Image (cartoon, rainbow over all chains, first blue to last red; front, side, top):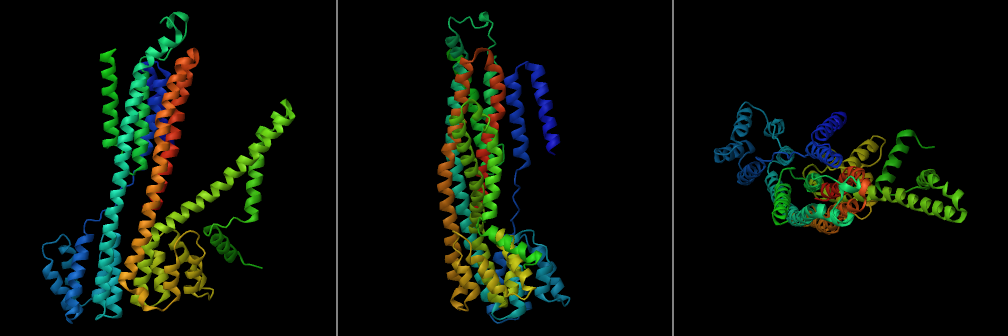
Length: 258
Length: 247
């Protein structure tokens, strides 16, 4: 994978250099493409937790039926009857039919594939609670569901902290991008000013070409991609796109003015 | 004399507890000395200045290598803090439901709780030699630095039924999680300005320098962009690590 990435970066460098004959631009574009490859490769795909809340809801209903002193099997059937319209109803029907065939509830709960960790844990705990103390199991299941719900609130708070951080970062990234776009836009004038009397090429000096703004655009994209990686979000997001548009807008505005 | 696996376990436990032994320190010193030898030719130019440069390079390299060890320990500590709440709840429920410390340790070992799962695995391994799981697990937690493990230790050693109370567990888990949240916000507030200082200051300096460099501008800019990307990569990596270990 590393060799493939390096090879593709080399190819990008060669293509850009052949087209533009500009060393800074080729170096900037190739390093940005390397960053983009690394960002896409390290993207952490979120585990799906779609049914977790429905399982929690089911177990709280199951715990209530257990509390009414009905047998675990009867309580389970009654709870399944109340959760007919849910996404998990297929899994529930499967467990229910196994129970009717004579399997124990705890065994069936453990055999089911849940797809996410918290549902699996809840099932394991419910199974062992039912095995050890079927009457007291309702309290344990209800407590664990409460804990999971509190954890879900904490997860939302965690997301909120991350969103705040991302918002701060987006504002700062946009400000930085505007400053760099202005600098890249006025850099040809700065070069003329620094070399004196505007005869830059006349003195035989090799000045960076007109592609300099593109090279800095690529480096800005690379820093924004890395910032997105830092916040564990997809490389294509508001932060990157906003900065890209702001950079191009500022540059075009400067071109129109001067 | 200690047997092989036991020696490995002891070394592992010391490493997780953040203790830096003398052997490790001397290893750092040898590494720093070897790298600092690159600065020794300056002695040939000016003896006193060269000696000063060499000694200071040795000192700074040694500090850097030693602190890298501390940084690793700090990251481990943060990661431990992150998983502590889930692990405490899991252990409490396992102990409440089954009453067996083996099942508790097994739940921790299977629970993907990073270092905590490793402690549980180690304790289960030690139990094969006849060591008590409860006390060995409690011992591992007790020696963790800067992590509030007292509740989990109490949970393991005390038979107080109040500890299994859901309200107490919820209070503890929330407390652990909030500590990590505030620590993350603090670190983010330090790291974000550093990131933007680098993101603005480096291209700004490169542009100004390139205007003053005449013939050297093109090779300078060609080298600048990959270096800039690697510096940004380093900072982004730090941010990523904080997030993964704390949130």
